[in-house]
Image 1 (cartoon, rainbow, N blue to C red):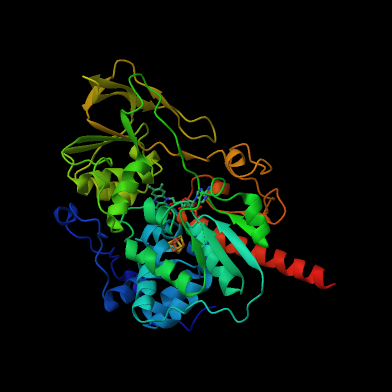
Image 2 (cartoon, rainbow, N blue to C red):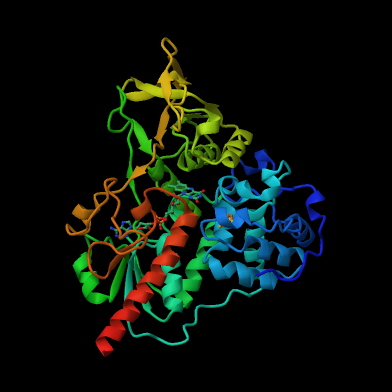
Amino acid sequence: MQKGGRSNPGGFLIEQRRLEKQPADARLRAFTEITVKPTADGGAAQAGRCTDCGVPFCQNACPLQNSIPDWLALSADGDLREAWRVAAATSTMPEICGRICPQDRLCEGACTLQQSGWDGVTIGSVEAWIADTAFDNGWVEPIRPLAERGQSVGIVGAGPAGMAAADRLRSAGYSVVVYDRHDRVGGLLTYGIPGFKLEKRVVQRRVDRLVEGGVEFVLNCSVGVDVTLDELRDRHDAVLLAMGVYQARILTVPGRGANDTVAALDFLIAQNRVDCGDAPVADAPHARGRKVVVIGGGDTAMDCVRTAVRQGATSVVCLYRRDRENMPGSAREVQNAEEEGVRFEWLAAPKALLSRDGAVVAVRAQRMALTEAAPGQRRDIAPVAGSDFDIPADLVIEALGFEPEPFAEQIDAGLALSKWNTIQVARGGFAASLPGVFAAGDAVRGASLVVWAVRDGQDAAAEIDRYLRARTEEAAA
Ligand code: FAD
Ligand code: SF4
């Protein structure tokens, strides 16, 4: 569905301009986003760089299959309201994905301009600009179901998967109750991802829309502790499990005692709570005046190093066992961290923690080398003999990734799990092993991305809708 022709056929000759960033020294104490909003002309010019190549690889690479060429063309023509309508048709969170998707690995990496040696279209920032403009101008439609269906769905987990499902199910006329063990809605959008990547107000706008549309949130409610899954299945016609994955992997090296390290999420949650307006807690982990070493190379590690810098650490080092090219975190975030003064020790793995008088004083690390890859396999790493070195540290943060919690034990023994201990769902769908129970997001995929959680939440909602309609028809027959 192309809206008219290109009004600017040579637009790609315009230079690619990424959003201007605040200077690094101005960012160092602020937990607000680091980019400057585009002007209307600047946004339109960047959108107009799309060549309408005819085979939208960008759209195929987007987990939501967003109609990217269409909303780029509309934005280039200045019709932001229609661009918003098209963007919102496939995504319940364009302003959030536009900010935090790793676009270099998704839509922008696949852009035909990028692939053919030009700089690709800055798709993510145009998407966020369209959506922010829609919120600013009151174009975001409230959730107003055409008719109430008289059935209810319980959702466990108020992260992006749960929120996306709640949006779609409530819009379809179901009454929706979302249960979460945290005291705020948003899952990792609120308590994982720091404000310098995604400001809390941006998440709150989405939460407000759900509340105003009639979605009920039951917070401080841990399913498996405060309420059982059986009780939820009695209360609701269907239940969606969207609980994410929260069991942090831990460092297993000599010298690591129980209190020698801090878990990445504990560190991030403490700061995110303050960003949400809570008073600082005296004994919460904090980097002020400390020599910080963060172990890991994913998004969580990048968020920790950049948070530590802002809290006033005296030094921040990121230790990662592979090299820059092979790290799982976004290249954009590494660049931001380096600009903010973080030092990266690539190809270096922790070997031991060194302590004096009961307190950690250094991380002993060892250099690693990449080995030759076996055919079709990723290059492995091997330690380099005699390459030990010490990094002074009095705060060591473990950011080694997350595993699922023991769901069957915590939630319901009848819940079938995959070999990775995620919730098992029917192939190609979202139905879990218990009747009327569905699952989506990281709890099914393992630690993944926000955009995939949104996609799962939306698709799970569509499957639940089909399931409940079929049940209504059966009952009427
Ligand atoms: P979550 O967001 O984890 O939400 C699950 C919710 O379930 C939580 O609110 C939790 O409290 C609740 N819950 C769990 N168990 C129970 C229970 N028993 N009872 C009640 N409630 C329960 N992705 C990106 O795309 N870009 C990024 O930049 C990015 N940065 C990240 C940074 C960090 C620090 C982390 C940890 C992850 C990051 N991710 C990023 C990944 C992304 O946040 C997740 O993939 C996404 O949030 C998964 O969504 P979800 O809804 O499945 O789960
Ligand atoms: Fe790109 Fe993510 Fe937006 Fe899809 S949702 S267009 S991958 S930024």
